[in-house]
Length: 119
Image (cartoon, rainbow, N blue to C red; front, side, top):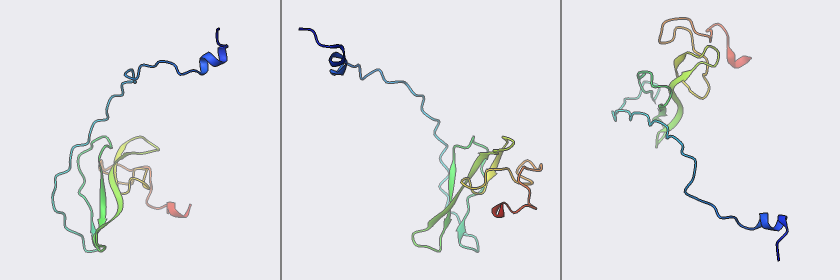
């Protein structure tokens, strides 16, 4: 007795589980040197700027007033959403436009005379 087409398609089919798509792994960021950083007078440990790495590394800014220290924001390299240039962002989650007088010394897309929080 032959099965109807809908029932034959509903039955479990043999699969080859070894044929998964091959995804190239992302390059791992270089590990940061494990140096003990000193807190600034306001109680924050802010990492120093590092050479441009394509945006793979993010470093936390720690508030050492709390025990254990609390992560306040993350810094790192980021592409400007307006012009596409790489710039070192003091807050990678919020600051997405290159600022005035960035690392290259040229004027950026984010002007200092505009308060963007009020827009």
